[in-house]
Amino acid sequence: MNETQARKKIVEILKDMWDRGHVNTTGVSISYRLDDSRILVDQSGTAFRKCQISEDDLLIIDINCNLVETAPNSPERKAPVNTIIHTEYYKANPLARACVHCHPRYSQVFACRNESIFPYTLQSHIIGEVPCVFVNDTLLKKDFFDGNLNIEIPSGLHSRPDVFYVMQKVADEVVSVLSGREKEMEKHGLAVNHFEHGIFVFGRNLDEAFDNLERVEANAHVTIMSKMLG
Image (cartoon, rainbow, N blue to C red; front, side, top):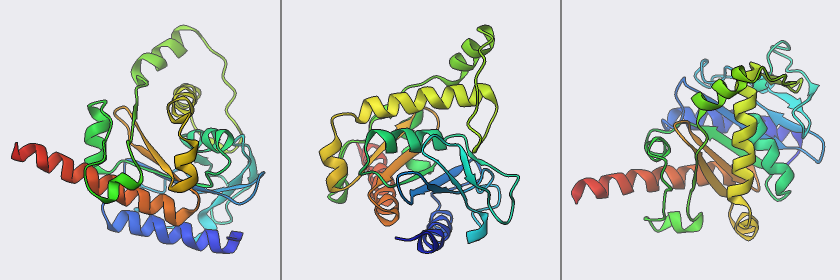
């Protein structure tokens, strides 16, 4: 997929995510590895605009989240800070080429309970277990301020230093938790939840990442409903 196609596909998927209720104004991010050195990503604030963006609202960063090309529509805006989680897994597993992140209502129940989402529906067996990474945002931010840490934020990210500090820790945990599941990534992609936050779904392409999000959210919904039935 070339850059023009990727821009169109990202805009299309973001609209679908909003229309299907996977995204609300609390946050979303999406990225696609164009090649080994360039990653196409949305800007911070996409969710506030209800995912109503154009192809010119996307920017390009490198694998270390440094700015390569600004977005034509809003050159002052940077990528969401959680993009560091996308890029760290891209480094760990070159087969991963796309990532979608959001706070969908049913998957987030498991994130808030710090529980894995296990396969329940037939389609969910394709992607397997969705683990939950436990990184306590509040405690880490306290550690950051108590330690007077000096953190340098990559030039492509929009963030405060304390938030970037937390997201880097989450990224490290995501890489660790998904370690050993490379063969699964090769076959169908993977997903991981972040405690009290939201889900990160990786695919070999953008369509696969979105399809996996659909599978995980549908599985989480059915699992919750089944528990209500006893």
